[in-house]
Amino acid sequence: MMDTGNRNSMIAALVIMLGFGVFAYFLPAIMLAASAISPVAGVAVVVLFIMCFFIIFWLRARSQRRKQD
Image (cartoon, rainbow, N blue to C red):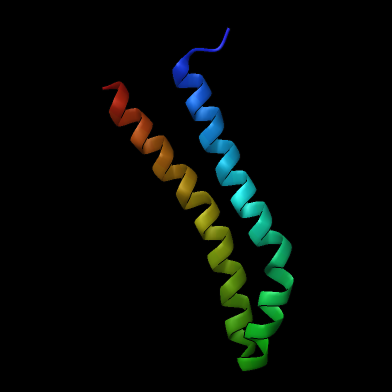
């Protein structure tokens, strides 16, 4: 059986993944709109998206480690 901690972690991961999935769905349109301003802006949008994906999971893992100590 799943305990409360595992269930909460799974729900949090699901919400994060769904949020990024929705954003990734609209990412090409956002990137093209930013590229109309500047090609560098289009690249910056994609780089920011990828960095945020890993930073959020890193911060979540860090928070979980603090709770265990």
